[in-house]
Image (cartoon, rainbow, N blue to C red; front, side, top):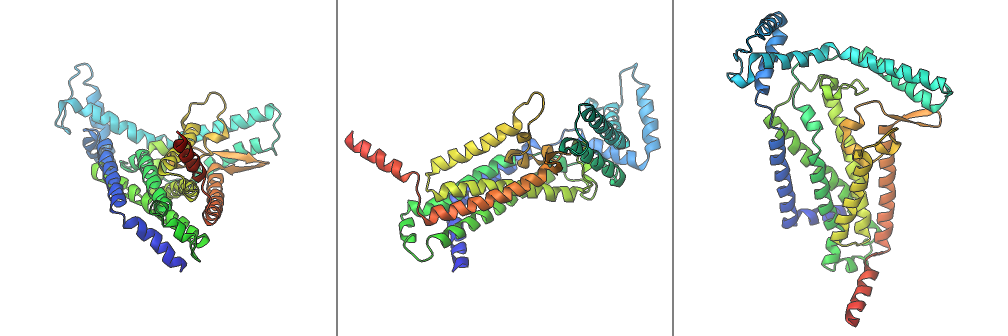
Amino acid sequence: MKIKLFRYELQKVFSSKLLIGLLIFLLLIHFFLTLYISTPEPWEATVEEVYQQYLADPLWFDSYFEELNTLADSGIYPYTFSGNEQYNDLMIFNIVSERSRYFADYDNRIEKIIASTNHNISDLKDYGYSESGGTVKTQVAQKEQYERLLQTLQIQNEYTKGYDIYLNNQTVCAFILLALTTVISFLYLHDDSVHFHIILQTTKNGRAVTACAKFLAGITLCVGITFAFSLATFAAVGLTTGYSSAFNAIQAFEEFARVPWTMTVWEYLGFHTILRLLAFAVYTCFLSVMGSLRLPYLLCYAGNALFAGVNGALFYRTYSGTVPVTRYLNLASMTDVCQLTGFYRAIPIGNTPVRCTVLLMTGCADICALCAGITVLAYSKNWSLFRGFKGRLRRFLNRV
């Protein structure tokens, strides 16, 4: 019976042509918008071609690059590779040289982080912080993590493309939130709009069991919607720029140079997806609570927008001085995974440093469990925050 109710809730969503049409419309808008914003610069194809030649024959590259630099007095450079004088050979070679230099200097970057952390540890001790305290231990954990990274990481020098654009795409989050708000609100409020909710409340399985079925259906739809929009993003970026090797270290992309773990691109993609899924699961649970209280569609949209806005304000606002822990301990940071994981971030709890990602994942699981309990209780007890307001409004209008 429970499986049948779960299937019924999913079927109810998929049988709504208007709702499915809206989801497809949002998916297409996002896909074409991503195609537009991920279009590479016109010289990127030439840079990739020259980069491949540089990897195959570095001596030829250095020789020709030196020859190009001797033409600085004339200011006239050939455009052999691009065929366009706007993108001359010196410009292309400068870009290739800068990108290849990143790989050569990578160890120095990490060593600077380690040196800076050692300096912080020394300063903390001078200020009277105990070595056994959480603040110093957090800095020590940061230093040790980057030392391990330096010892274990192996980056392959290659022309990297695609994954940085996909991972930094934030517009997809707005579309997923809009789609989730629409679908989850419909899941809970459709029965009430067709006056079927009253009948359900009188049946054997129409209360707690139905609430469980709705909640599980909502989480399932959350996973499906998140994957659908993520795959649309992945496909759009693939069509415009293509992808480099997924088996290289994620640190091969300069924007991810300070990621503190030894991870391949594929592993980081999986971690990125899990964090986003957990964040959207919490949004779904929040919507489930509002839906179980039978709030109108408009209030569900407004409530979720407010919830997302508060999290966004905590994460994206500009902080002066010491950044508070709330900067990263919120759902917006979980949807912007690149910033959250772009550096070693940990918080001392007692005398033990705990990574922000671990705290966030644990917190999301706890919030989802709490929301599940509230949803089942509110639905089974037939609570309605809006019902009393509607009655008072009707009586007021009748008096008027």
